Image (cartoon, rainbow, N blue to C red; front, side, top):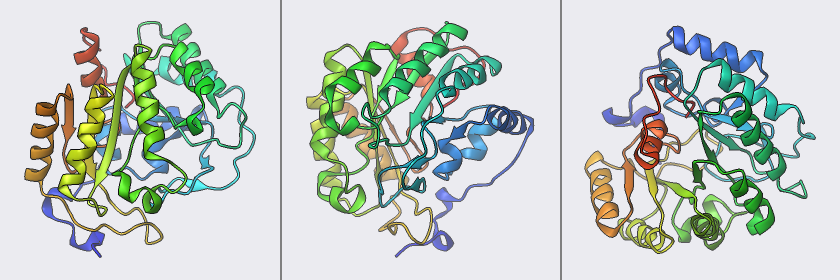
Length: 296
């Protein structure tokens, strides 16, 4: 089992704090917001926050699912805050963002799977920051069409849903999810005009051929953007790292994925769901997002 003590040089990260980091941290605290950067212990937090970037997490900080890789708290969430969409929109406005990424915990306890808050959050951002593009990283909504359609109808610029790992590992890595259900989310979103995106972790027990097979499945649902990054064990209670994938293998995944027909592949040890999000939306939107870094 690999541990933090024997990470290779390409995974060693220096944590630093600058004025952008402090400013963003203050805005998050003042507006009582959650970020996946903090809750999921993202290794890029120092780099991204230093650039004035973060990924906001709505619907609380307690997830109804218990994935073996994820550091977000699991349990019975409290009733959600109905003012959260407006608070998120205010934070986006304060940071003068051109692109924002929003994600959430799973809310399987709610009849609408939390989709009403999702739609309201997008709508509130539009009201206060009409020039800001919106990227959403959504759960699978248990494969129910109505919640998914509610988010699609709010017209985010990018709709992202992570497949996380190869089909064989679902029972161990994300036991309350289904691979085919995740593909369905991406396929239906694409059918309704969305720019679609997904991501996986490697180094958790998959084989090279299984990753290639997964990419072929993503081509079948006409995926636009694919992110591949190294799995890092957040605590001793989570699944162990099986291996540290060399940067050369990540480069090979990028080459194969784009040759297969995925329009954009972001592949590297520290790549995460929202890595280079503002650059990706520029590519698919066709217009620059501006000089201010986006949340994401």
